[in-house]
View 1 (tube, one colour):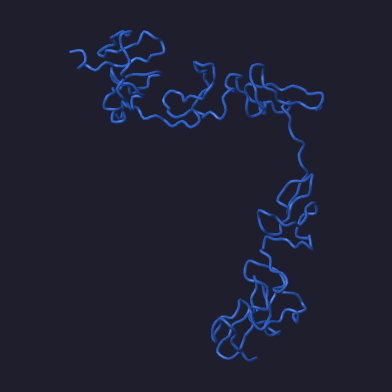
View 2 (cartoon, one colour):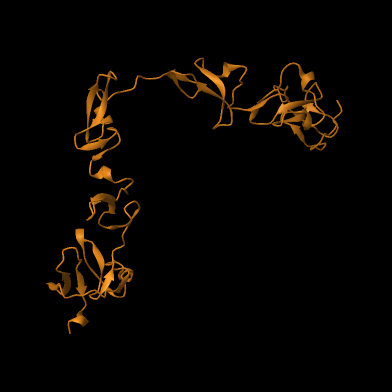
Length: 292
């Protein structure tokens, strides 16, 4: 048999896994197992005659034929599917309780179990009867209880009195439910005006919806304003506190021009604090140079 190179191949190089071209003749190392018996329908002159996932190769007895690329299967002309795809016409590759459908996610034909069954499509088993909280009490939230609902004829989780939620994943106090989307490091608290808002827990800072771990000024005093001191705060955390005569969050302090007549000076150890008579006025540490 004369070996004639085709596009992309040279004499003396491997033409295909089932044939090789040593100089002037083609020697078939194994019969081709690709395609069907009617090879006349799969003959080609070059790869443009084949499926987009196929190519034109030398066959043992049929000249050039279309064959699917490695990783694909099919006749090489009309169809070349990936190895894990199924044939929408022939469902035999799927489980008896599955069907071959086009999956939007996979962007390919795949086996999927029919309704009432679950699995990967190659193996499908009947859906197990869903458990209720009667069989598995841990399905309920810690602040919920398992009760029987006559209208649904089943047991369900319901939040305990004083809490609201779905009973399974969420049961929060009615006060906390007044706030929405609080950070996991925040709590819901009432404002002086009677409203509710998310506030970051001690050791965190932010707007209550996003709370980041607060760097302690005890470890890094540079986070305090030049007009602030690092002092003990709530929960044992050290916080920045603006000097007497300044106001702010301690990280940023600006001059405070309000009158200080209604104030007290309180000694705490080696520190002196300025405390307003008004309970809503926060205390501030007085630096030593104000006392000399």
